Amino acid sequence: MIKKFTLGLALAVSAALMPAATATAADYPVEKVKGAGTSACPADSVCLYQDSNFNLDSGDDGAWIWVVKGTTARIPDGGNDETSSVYSTLNRGADVWMDANYKGDSFYVPRFNENYASLKNVPQGHMTANFNDSISSVTFDNF
Ligand SMILES: [Ca+2]
Image (tube, protein in one colour):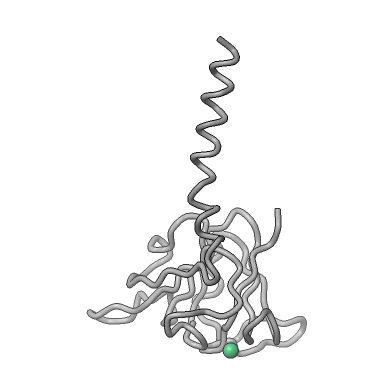
């Protein structure tokens, strides 16, 4: 009885892990969707919004969200240097970088934090930096 339960649990765990393994296998695990608001950001993702205020002011045609599912050396699909707001649903930290390959200035994006509705004055120590239309790569922290 216990053995059967353990096997069932092991199968359930491996099934739950499979989508993540598939997504991180891609070179650029990024999905491009249209949407607005932090609720449009899927679970376990860093969402790079084309416009400020999480695309909420973007008009009838909407705007793009690049949904980042893993560490990405260069945002694909027209998303390079396009981000104007950022939101994360990850259960770990992430950093967004100005240059490709995790170079240049960066900042840390905590989970469920709405402080980055605009990227024009991101705190950098005692200064601020303008990250608007600049983000080129994303790193996910290890657990
Ligand atoms: Ca850049």
